[in-house]
Image (cartoon, rainbow, N blue to C red; front, side, top):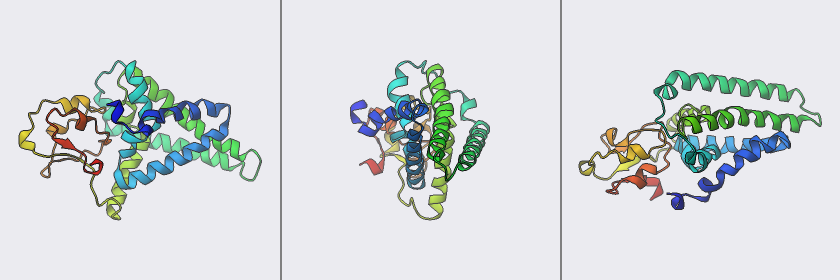
Amino acid sequence: MLEKRSNIRKYGWLLVPLVAFGGLFYPILGLLVIAVMIGLMVTGLMRGKYWCGNICPHGSLFDLILKKISFNRQIPDFFKSSLLKWSFFVLFMGMFVLRIIRALGSLGTEEFTTTLGMTFVLQYLIMPTILGISLAVLINPRTWCSFCPMGTLTQLLYQAGQKFGLNSKNHYVTISDIDKCEECGLCARACPLDLEPYKNFDQNNQFTDPDCIQCGACVEECPLELLNIPSKN
């Protein structure tokens, strides 16, 4: 699978230690998170969680590095629950807003850039990096992604994009002939979020689960080559 991945997916993980740990010594590196957030929001409007499966630096770290040392257990239902998902979203965004307000207190001073940069560094370090890495090793590489606040944000943005016609083209995993599916379950085993495409195709032969990160793992794993993501053809 690795050879089929883009360079962004292969090497994006390098941004994590650069910002999360390098930023502790050079806080200005934290400003790179602004670019990450802009990219995430733009792709969220048009493609939902596409960022999570194809561009996210942490996703790259989880898939390519930590998967090798993970216990690779099934993600417990608790981590997929709406309660945890929305609780973390409120907590994460609340902490972020409070830190930004504090940083703005130094606006106009020489310390502002450093203070703002450190705000992003700490936000990047504590939850997605420290907590995300811990869960990746102890449970499953993509456990954090099950309730990641940024992933939740992309889902909200996608819904907004639908209302404004910004994502009229769909990018769902599609099965060419559902009658030929042998329900072997290999697509589900390949899914990093433990989703089950073969059980959940709709009347249009599409897997429209909003938690799908469009990584293409199920497409690559299908032995009959029945699956595809239209936008990647």
